Image (cartoon, rainbow, N blue to C red; front, side):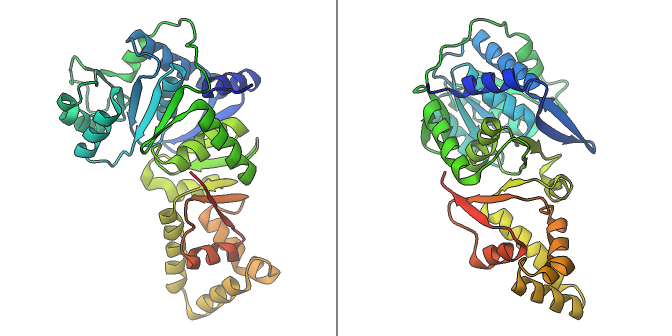
Length: 340
């Protein structure tokens, strides 16, 4: 029997209620979210949407960095029978306007004051947009607007009711110019995991925006299906430190991220002593199959990158430049391209 995404979540939560499914680095500590917590929070968002007469097939948007709150919103929209639309957090106001108008977005969840400003700038020219929900009210204590409310206030108004009847062929996720059904999303997840082989016990670090199919389909939804723990950055600026500390077993990133990692190690090698440079260059040529190169250099490089436990590395679309993939292969990291 074909499932919907809410069906999948309900099944996993029933089987793994006390197990950790998400973590977020906050003030130096990794805070955990269990399957039971996740299930409760996505249901609360769904109930709140139903309370404001958000109907099956309606579009709700998310303008936020990738965080656990963004996950609750995304899954809550799906659980309310809606279509979830994630916008890149760095979109300019004019592009936000175009996306909201074209999609007919009815409810927009914004991360903070910065994203709220964009939403308020374009609201009047987005006739379908009736409500803006603010996830983080920092700096907005005195803010008041009849069309806006805090996330906590919004969720508090929800009343648990009958689950929405959602079929696998109902629309679920809007990605770029495509709207995917629940069945199409789960088929993509299944295909991706045949290639990647994610499994319970794996850990991943979310470094891409929710608007990126690599994060949404091959990151979050794949993790929920396979029982992978998703870990979220303390902030975009701490990606390097969080990667080093977490040491994920799965790492999906875009070509730019892989290129930056290569450039950082190359710059470090260039600044080293002549002997160290010679040893590094020799080890890269020898590759991880050489036990001496591995012991003297490559193991330390993988540790510096936070990749000493890495089992699966992947990128969407085209692979990074050959220089980067060859370098990664020398470290023992094979970057697999996945189709989005």
